[in-house]
Image (cartoon, rainbow, N blue to C red; front, side):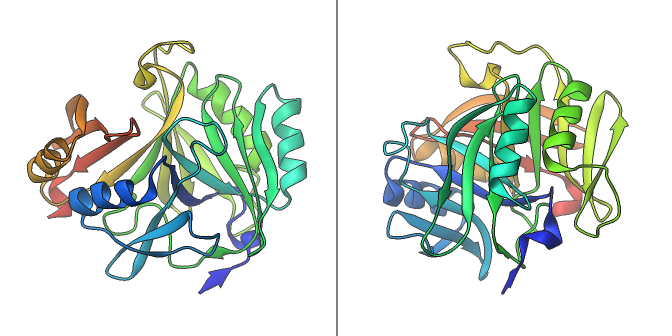
Length: 263
């Protein structure tokens, strides 16, 4: 089932891994997170990860084709791709790829905010049964940036956050030094201020969007990640829960979360 993007304008509408080897990425994330896979609608290079038949994320063997690093990228729904790209440029962001039209329908672009954090924009139909915060995956999105308030202004102007008047529109609030993005009352992203280095050799120190996946047994999931070629980047406790940021065998960063209420 699909919805037109107008129903979710401004909200995260998909999550995609730009990989070098799709099958290798499928084996890794299938083992670590228990995902199954089906063909995507954008050709043989793409697949859709599922849990119990519900879509979680996409994997595309496009890192080499588009000369982009292996990374997880959140996509946000927009009403018109060219207009959104124009707003990114007008506000000091950059455009890496696109907008690109797909034969199966829809237009997409890879862009970056003023600090260099990469995100995607999508103009087209979206999956109705996908949403951040539902079940285990993805739990939420996190932006590492120098100034969360300034970043929220940029994204608000590009994506229409906080404008009201639409069920699909997102609201923002400033909470404990974070900007929290909510859609229909549910937190879907957090923008965090902190030290960043745009040219840091370690990608986790650069401005970036990071995806959090919730797992029922964090230690077991981390063990599977390491046994299958991943590596640990950071780990911390938070509010009674725990999280570990990992790098997959190809370099893609992701975070696994365990919270007591997820059992």
